[in-house]
Image (cartoon, rainbow over all chains, first blue to last red; front, side):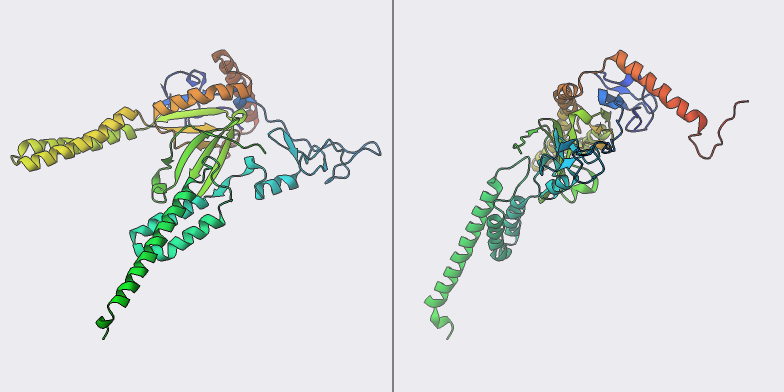
Length: 199
Length: 193
């Protein structure tokens, strides 16, 4: 990867006087005011990956996935022995490729999680948006309750983990259901109190 | 796994362009050893993590949006004010002054928030735009907050002398590679006689 930094607007290469300055300076090529801060990792050379040492001594532990290669350490999740090639490091822990994949798909390794469904947002939307046309709430209010109860224990937003949206959605849905019940009661009592209107 | 807690760095802001139509909003959060970039549409959230040890550069360039907004919203102010001064009907005068005041309020908000910009974060594998950092003042506040964390994760700050020598070294390292092979495949390599 090229260590030279380019202007984000015109992609001209920037030279030393542009970096880590306290104020915005004009790009030498396009004159747009720029602020660029660089850090030591920009110049860090990428170390090539290791392929693992071959087994030289009989009786030495071998990698679970590569029996001809020497095992270096066990997987922190399943305990299988791993060679240098199979060792996947993440936040100071060592995983085998299988555990890494499982950790990602099942959400066990939180730092690999890159998407979540916001069931509380869905429930709140089901409770709020149909209010624009109130008749829809006859269907969406029970749906809101179903979503809120069904997914109550599901993981929510990483950054906003509270259940306040679920609570608000449930309250709104209950109010809507109560409103419909009152409407039906009102209509049925009116119908029964005016039987002569039919004849 | 321990529970990760995040501190908010920026409010949710639209990504811009057509994302406004699909209500996609982005925000930046500070974790223990990384920045978390969150893209949310209200129903799903997508996360990107930038570990402090991997951040190579933070880049910001100013945009013209600040100036354009000021000009665009100043025109109705002038028109409404002129109309208000020209009219003799009290009710209409008040209405036109209110309309001028409304647009003036927008301009004042824009002035208070400061210059607009676009921010980018560079790692070894990508350069990602950070839409939540769209005002220079907010960018400087955020950079001041995360700079010590990045420096601590990477083992120290770069002094101007170090930057100069590293860049010169980088240029010298990349120059011999291009001597034998032309960078433009359309141009034949130069042969020294």
